[in-house]
Image (cartoon, rainbow, N blue to C red; front, side, top):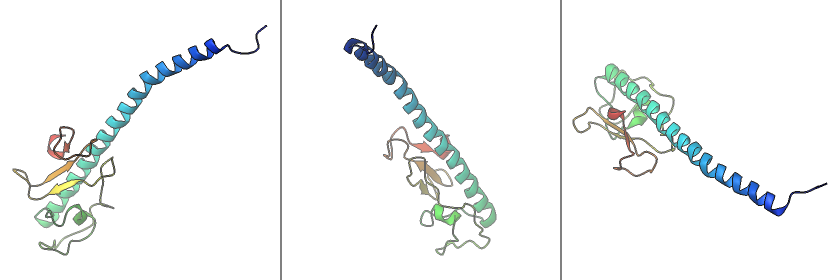
Length: 133
């Protein structure tokens, strides 16, 4: 009658767990990254909607200098909106806890709204652009 595992049995179990971890961890990690991308896209759509409402109320988008903070606090720099109201509760960040890139006016667009994406580097192919979601 055996009361303990042999060293070989323990090594087999450790190898099996290692193989399972090698298969499962990348899938879970990939899903976390994909979930962050989707969360950032949803956030960008909400910001775009708030910017559109700002324009409807005031006749223009916040300037680059005013930034997305203009959706939370009334800007003091020109052009000062006359019919401003609070459009968001706080200045949003992307799913990687980085500031969005906002430029107004944009190039061939009324404004640009981007996230640097998972790699955190501007101008790479994983960047997210509100006009290409």
